[in-house]
Image (cartoon, rainbow, N blue to C red; front, side, top):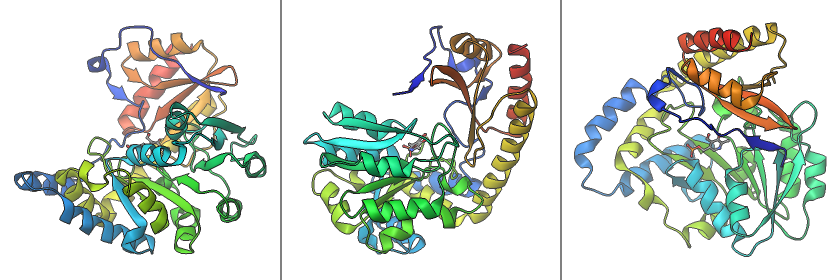
Length: 348
Ligand code: PLP
């Protein structure tokens, strides 16, 4: 892999972080309506949440234009990435994905004995779909696409991606992780979920952790062919992992369009601000449509991370192609101003 991460060699004390910009969390959520719904739902915590899960599944099915048997919920999309890996790689095989990519499903696949076939992103940080199609062989069990991609924040052309998914999914399921989709200006024309409605063997993952601001509440879902969903739910439990509080919160969050739109707008404004400031300092920021930005830094990675930490800013530092890169999540405007000020002080 070309992607490595700098792990703090110093003693990391969370309470010293004033601007937590390290985990692509939404600084505005959960919405006030969600907080109210969750507070009221606590008293029903003696009951299992199967009915609420069914309600949420109905709402998701309607939104995505499929029937209920196309939906599976999980406590975050991480759970669904893992469960998909379990059923796909229990007999080894390989997984094809871009590099760098979000490593969750790849790590699980490898721990189950599968091999990873990484395909470098193009020079403009899109998926190299031709090379990925070529990498698929008789041992490939799953193709993983993260769009928009993490940690690069970049987007792959949706027309090309649709053609790729439609073609590859004739022989191998394609998993499209759309955790950051809702931050795009045009999510509807970028999602691959329409392919599922068309009967293609495509698995689309979404999460309430990002735009909905519910990362700690743990709800995510996949949309896939009913046989794909059954291949998972026949082996592992689905709704047993879900909390009634989070389910009730997700139901309300899906209806709170005003909150979601507000998050999308504020996120885009912060991203523009940081992009402009950091680019003006001469750094090559990758154009992002997500809730984070990444750019190569000139300083040694560990030293940079420690200096930012000392000023109370939590960011992530990756090594890509032997160079250190700073990945910064969008916080509030105030936090982003603090990030920029700290960055300038640290890198003089
Ligand atoms: N997929 C991508 C691309 C992510 O960046 C993340 C979290 O950062 C996840 C999935 C997992 O998120 P969660 O389990 O909270 O849904």
